Image (cartoon, rainbow, N blue to C red; front, side, top):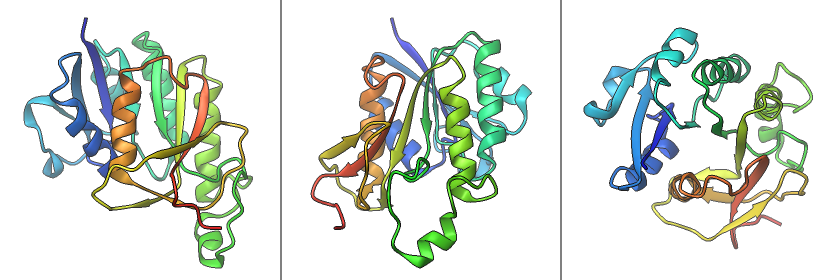
Length: 210
């Protein structure tokens, strides 16, 4: 039986890469949810909606088996609450949630510019703090979740080997291509029990910055 997958924030580069790897998969039906009609790239599979509007999400999730969220990068707490509620209303359990590295204090940022931009993960008014609270909401939602925390993202058109650290692992600053993350998410969707109930950090092997 085919899996009906809804990609939220489908115009995001990682989501688009995942779509490219899933669109011809005979075991998957992909639906794309995006806010801006000017960014539609597959009209037949697309739903236009706003994830800050709960009704839009509830409607988009009808008949869906798996939700894959690339929403963000801001207002993550509100978005997480809406995704959880819409999934509950539609009795959907499996969710993949895109977050970012650093939300658990698991990496030491030594770049002053990065520290100023990302903020303290313990401060809800910062980028990392907002991301952390949203990820915690997903983790404590009773959904079958996997949280994805990519390292610094690049636009390299390359599929890299991946180093994975789990929820309690310590991570180092490194990088990974958006294409690699997109491909890995497409793989996970076909392995629905892999990394369930975990929050995983993704880094390209050999791309650690000591």
